[in-house]
Length: 286
Image (tube, rainbow, N blue to C red; front, side, top):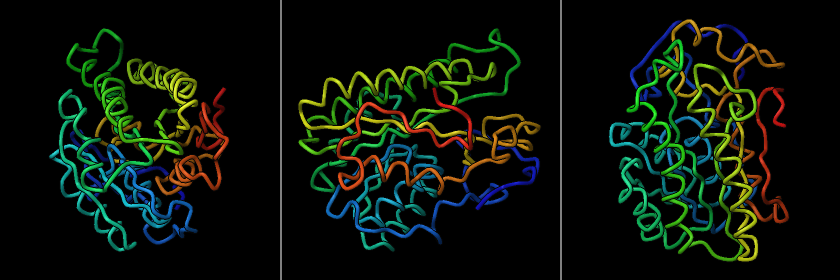
């Protein structure tokens, strides 16, 4: 599971695909064992085709949940692989292609998920985008800024607003933050800012939705080996990815998914709301 040695030099075009990555990420396909923490639940995972989203979908399914995953149309192959793993766990998987930067698409995805699954109990706002192939803030274009903020923030707002008409007492929202909210890299100025905003959104939503019995939390991953890395990082950064953590390595998606299970399940986190749970390889989240 661990990656203690440098990654081979590699690069892809965004959004990146799993099958071109060396080594292939571990999403828990062979390791995650469920214990019925989400039996009967229905979950929507944005960006569920690959990376952390795929690992969460697999873990949720093995815990007993049906899962809907949203993804970009060009990620169809990865999405179908995720669906196969969900089906192998004996659960339903709804495939929802579409670009969440489009407001109508983002607002519609929760309704589509609820329609196919028969409701939504858990929303995982996982879809995200970054671009680190630049030397300074002067190189950030308006198009790049729009892509980061619309994917990471606007879509989160739009999807959440629509999902609230389906989430009821006992429901959960889990946002995907990042270590970048606490230790921002200069090459990820816009991405880091969006993740810091997600932390604030999480706390505010927890305060607002608590009286409705809906818990809101976030997971802040550290450097995790997903398609986003070779698709958005310079080759030299990919080679040393994650080795600056106290554990000395990058994490795998399978190592992040249990945090989402913990926060989603009333068995383990019925009194947890408004928190950000770090899965960072030892980097502090405070």
